[in-house]
Image 1: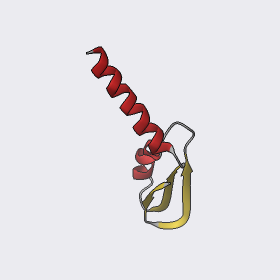
Image 2: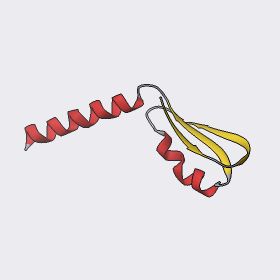
Image 3: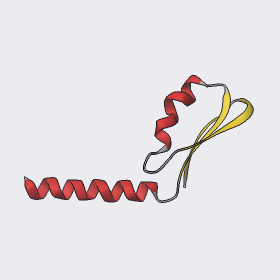
Length: 65
């Protein structure tokens, strides 16, 4: 699991994404709310799925030319 964190004051805000998204979708919001404690959590296995899909697409592009 990976975690994005922005340190600040007040009650912490925790962001959870739906599959197959990532915590990157919350970066713009986190920058707008700077000054607050914020955590954006990636669910387990997300990065592995992205790497597999990227590898498959790369191999298809190589095969097709």
